[in-house]
Amino acid sequence: MKKVIIFTTAIVAFVCLTTNLSAQYLIPAYNAEIISDPTTFVESASDNMCRSEYCNYLWNFKSAEKKKLFVLLKNNSTTVASATFNIYSPEHDILYGPYTVTEGTLFTKELNADYIWRVDIIDCTINSTMNIWIEY
Image (cartoon, rainbow, N blue to C red; front, side):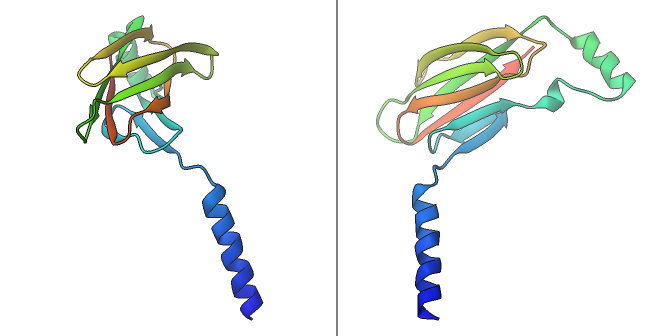
């Protein structure tokens, strides 16, 4: 019985120590902690896709060719926050970046409104939080 407990404990410890942490948030996200690499932000598909004819009509009415992605970074400590990230559309193999943003600077990027976008954090300062949203 002792061997089973030791073996199980060893396996659990191995899995916990070798697994990379990751965080994923939907866009828009406000005060989202960038806790580990990779941290990703994914545009909500429900903003771009609708299944009813009425919803499609409303979407086409407010539709735009471009949308703007906004990123604002903060740090919860005394150091100035900075983050480096890529913006891409997985379905269309479009990649922008890497971009670096520092605390207090509003980053904006104009993107195609027909695509769903994702933001991957490459590097950031400790204790950083990010506000990220899209406007049409």
